[in-house]
Image 1 (tube, rainbow, N blue to C red):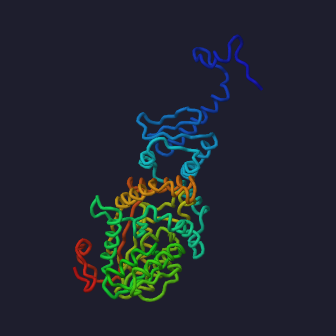
Image 2: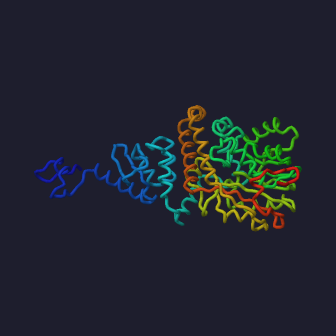
Image 3: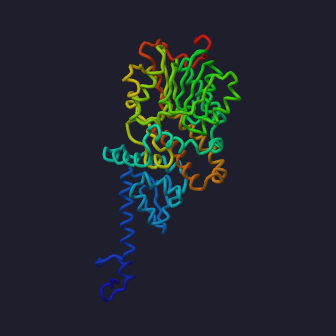
Length: 432
């Protein structure tokens, strides 16, 4: 029923004249707008009051700070309510589908939000855990294959557009800030090999070998024999083709199988960028496998994205980018080592190196965005832009870490210093 203004006054005069007499009603549009602003204000407070501006589809602006880092345009009321219901899950979906637009620098916007986002409460952690598991299969033998192929089998041509020439899809190592991505990825391969103290003729098991760069590098430059496991069909096919050209002596065997099925005895174990996909519930299983295959003088290294405290992957990334992924804290990683009496020899955090790596990847991705759109579509481009930019920001602001953990049998003759990491290493006799 239409509501009439007080006697003798027009509707317009009541709305525009706030003076003495407060009307007993508010027009529906004004009430809705006030409710929307209230809900948005509560959402912004819940995520730490970032210095951003919200612009609604009708041009109405909601400011939470005098100095805003960026503005966010919400294009429709449905997008607004989805965002309010779960900003962590739905922001990425709405951004990808262009129902939300960041006006200004995406990196500036993400940094403004990430720097104030509060630590997770137990209640929020439990809810996020539910969302993560409901959106992805657990990392069983079959579930892991689904999860890995969702991300890594998008096509080698896609990854060639923005990775380095060796197709290394993990954190690089910038010994100098002005190194190219190619130089920094090569430096990372050597950094890992030096930590493992590889000697010619030794055997190495690699779990999760990507496109084969580390396995081939270890064989060519350190004279070791490598068995490399991976369950990504696209990556294994590419690695085997590379091996035919780069490994004429046949030192590397690329095996399309789960790491849990590995057998044999090895001098060293290495995993670069795979632990994120294992799942904490399978860490003891991983440790058991390492214990089974390592010789009495065995040692190993695990390179992984990590966290300062245990929490699940954010819901959007878990659903759309990395199903089943779960970066660990250092305490969680100890579940791999402690039950089998492994000694942790060295822990290094390369967080800022990963921020720099992602900067290179994002730049290259943007240069090829038109080609990516031709391969997939605009929504895919925006989704991956947000993933790369969000990852860069998380490492820059300290929300994510990059751990390299070296370990060995308890009686392994560990080096007295770290000199071997920064000097030339002779793999023939194992000396500096």
